[in-house]
Amino acid sequence: MTAEVKRVSNILDRRFEGHWKQAETGLYVLAAIAAWIVRFVQDDAFITYRYARNLARGNGLVFNPGERVEGYTNFLWTLMHVIPEKLGWSSPIFSQVIGIALMVATVAVTLRLARRLFSSQSFGFLVALTLLANMTFLTYATGGLETMQQTLLVVSVAALLLPVTESATGVAARRVGAGLCAGLAVLTRMDSVVLITVWILVYLIALWRLEAGSSDAGIRDTGSEANPVKAVVVAALQIGVPAAVLVLPWFVWKLSYYGNLLPNTFYAKSAANPLVPPLYGLFYIAAFFVSYAAFLLIGRFRRQRKALFAVPGVAQVMAVIPVWFLYICAVGGDFMEYRFMVPVLPVLAMVAAYLIDEYKSPRKEVLLIVVLLFFSGIHRVMPTIIPYPVLTFTELSHWPNESTTSWKGKGELLATEFPGGADLAGQPVLAVAPLGVLPYFADLPTIDMLGLTDPVTARTGYPINPYYPGHVRMATVQHLIDQGANLVLAQPGATDPEAGRDSYRLSELTFLYPSADLNDLPDTAQVIEIPQIDGKVWLVIYLTPNAKVDAAIERNGWNVYPIDHTCVIEDMDVVAGSGPFVDFANGMSRMVGERTCPQT
Image (cartoon, rainbow, N blue to C red; front, side, top):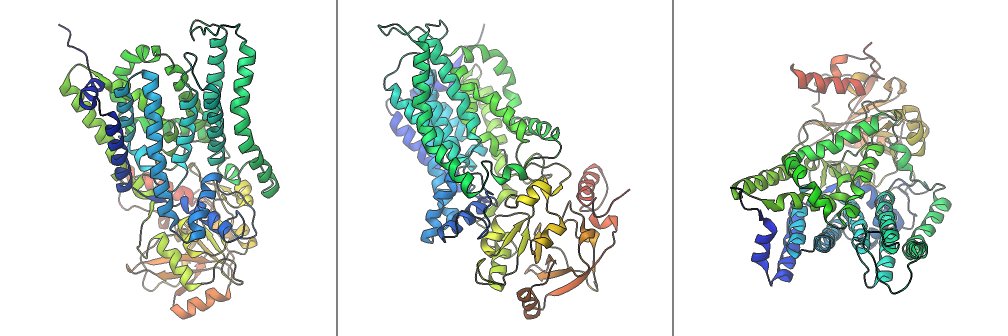
């Protein structure tokens, strides 16, 4: 005898029948609390905060006063952060609170879209639960970046336009609303164009079929002769004009202010080898699904996919997934914990909810859900063993962190030693790879060694090997000299001081300034050891002289050493011992030092 098919959504129906408003409210409150518990802010968010701070100070939308470079990709999100910077509030806390509110709104919009798509109140609620159970989605409610704002806006476009299955009331208002959301999404992040274009085209095609009386879209009885061309043109204008009113003035301003439509980050993140990013993008997508144990749902997907796509409108909503995955492959993925997956997670949550809804064995269903939740939960606590394909939330989190040895603590130390801010004459110029936390708190002129805010490095910097998304070029030594860099912080870290040391070899500095040719360092360059409270020292390359730096060295008694232009290959090893993992780690470390210390 075949076991009776049961549904999780039926359980929810029985539990919350007549109390759906209270259930939704409770869900949103719990979602906000959970997001606050797992909150974090990552380094890149502080790039946004620094741009916003300069605008609040009257310096313009720039990273360094007087340098017009678009080193951000989140215009609207950056403008929003002028508010806390102008009022003296905490930008990280502001971004977390706003992000959680946007996350709750995203869940609400997703719930309503799923409820309308599947004609089920309880299934919509199950989709919302599934979405919130995804740790990547929940944690990116914070993080300090525009991720959740983009997700809310693009999903709102879909919710306002889809599914197109029959004539609806208030069509014009919904189209205008979708156009406004589309424009705001592009202002939030330019690659929103990929998502909204798919859904708008799907809508217009479905509308054409509807107006033409196509059998697979339904026949609309309007009492008058249908005119597909007119209907599509009117709809396109109702969507496109509001979007254009928002986006076109921004494009004009970008051209006049920065001299380019594309942000400088586009060039900084474009790999020299065009074959590598697509392969890494595939790896990124596959790793995401494996890390969430999606392989456990493959059997159910094979059995239920026909029924899923037979639901009217499902194919319209799902059309965005393969296109977005192609985009991820084109750009080569991302190094942040599956951040690029977030904009389509509301859609993927519908698929996942559909697959877990139907079951026969309660024990197997409970076991499946427990295992899936376990795989999701470890995303928040798992450390990064190797940084491929992404850094986990543990490594990405840089705030709150009050340690004096953190990047925040290092930035505050520099602000104390060199007070007065970036506008004060004679301030030392920093050269940094992680451009967020440390420069924000140091508030000193800063050169981005990865090229996000530096057009020269973005286009002509050393290609970084091996490929790592978002980090594909490194500033040359000569460029830093030409730009007047004094202190090369590069990859800020700490090491144990060595008694009796009289110099530093180049091979001991490749971890600090990777992928460049340190043989180009001038003979006058030195290494400063800045003591940390844990007994370690922070190594900084003193590239070109600065009176304030000299005064700080004398005032604090910092040790200063010459640089010996020699290499000992073993200096570049980061792990002692033997074995495959040791060989891999040390091989990677030696690879980033290859230009300085060739091994052949």
